[in-house]
Length: 107
Image 1 (cartoon, rainbow, N blue to C red):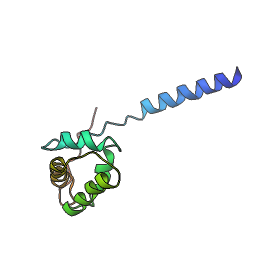
Image 2: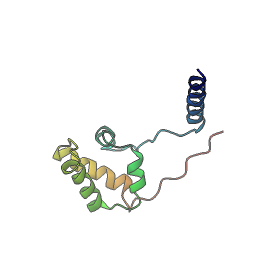
Image 3: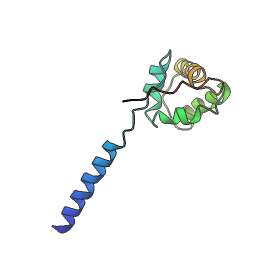
Image 4: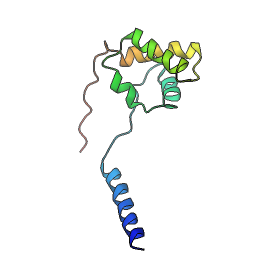
């Protein structure tokens, strides 16, 4: 009984800590191809992987990354969608893309 109480308290603490963290859901930049990226990429990883890699990857590197996801990781992306995904990632998350302005502070 004592261990059940401890686990219950720890579980509630974990739930309340995650609710307090205030993390926002990752949102992709809106544009042609964003729906394909959202549909295909989240099958294997979170969208924050795109933002983490975006400062470093140019078009050729995005092409190599998407190709790797298809051929090595088995992502079911057809060639037409691959081109659209690479276009989107290059335009909105490529190394040459200027960073987005900071979000307005929430009151």
